[in-house]
Image 1 (tube, protein in one colour):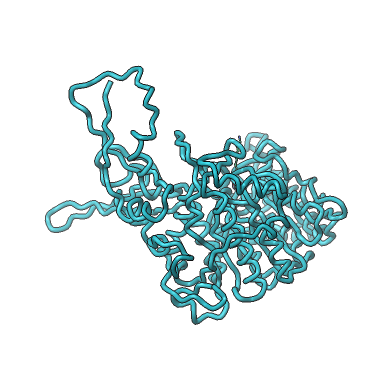
Image 2: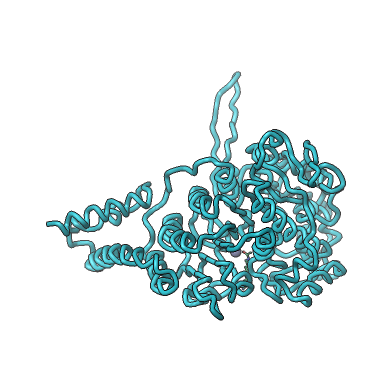
Length: 561
Ligand code: Q9C
Ligand code: ZN
């Protein structure tokens, strides 16, 4: 048996050491690891035996992908990030001050309390971002074998990526943080729920459900998240900001009238929808593309015709968390049709399934509803590589979806972060060069984590950049097409405009069935030339609407013959 002596291995410059002073209690993995001796259970020494020479064990946590690395190596074994990487040191996160104690970025504070940073002063109504470092203090206390997926790193990863791209700080306006008031919260949640969440501020560590934790800072983080969303909504609705992105946590869409669950404490999107209505909005559209069904948001607006809730999520006949969100759940008490669920029957759905659903369900219904304010409950857990979602949406897909919603409600669009977890979705490669008589390894890595690349792609669209025209993915899946048709069959009773979509998709479906039967015969039968073009082309980088138009053109030709 070896005795391991853990010593402070490296000082992660700009990461743990800088931040520790500013944020008591916000331990990085490195901090936790360094303090492990203190945290560990001292009674458990049953099989301990002394050894003559203590073996020194050096280890460090990667600032990029959070993996633990053993040994005195300079680069992370998993992602290749250098151990003293300054990835989190950029821009906003380099600040060690809380916004309200000082002007938190190099900018000036306007009379209305908005912080205008850098080049933004010149623009009259830019894209606004809501962020506050105190939301990073909400974190799980208990040390488990795996860190909780909803952890402070999520916001750090996005913020670092935005800062590196010069987007924020830089091209966006920061909204000053404010805690939501009791009165505003009571429009969404029960008094008891609000009191229960607030009470967690007195407890070192508490749990609403086994996976919904709170520490002493969580209640304030939840009030800040909701406050930022409310202020972004009214700033956008009143035209003080063009559109906005709420970089907030804890997330909100599972939080219902009287319960916290699914990592969510207060329902940020619901609070924002009501704030937009207080500012004068008549009809608010909420599109929820988090991979989980937003049961909380659905419950809050179930009998409300002024808020249309549309959710795309994995459902699997109720087997996927949280189990609600079947296509048959359409709203109640006269608000039938004001809840639209698009429940995927399996994982693996990708860009073209989402685009199919947007073109045939989300956009036609949204256009008919004619909202004057739009909110996206933007989880990024349907992203390729997400550890919980197991779906396949790429940053290009997220950009396309944002683009499709950016002209509804006159561009008044608020994107609110829900789920989506820090993952590495990229590869590392080395290039060897020979220079001045010695061999050098040039280290190249794409430190792309799905959550930060997806969020960055979305915010670029908010800033007016055109999303890449190419959806690098395959045709919609059979399962995706089936779900979209199922939804249309139900919703056409409430939204007559979608009837045409259903007819159009039914002809695509016939193509699927044909090919499927062919496949069953062992691929021996030669496909007829008339088989739908988009299906035959398979895994090619084509825009979805190319498939559709080509298919329809071919079909029309056949019919003419
Ligand atoms: N066996 C969000 O994405 N997992 N929350 C529960 C129970 C909960 C996800 C598993 C996942 C919640 C905001
Ligand atoms: Zn989720």
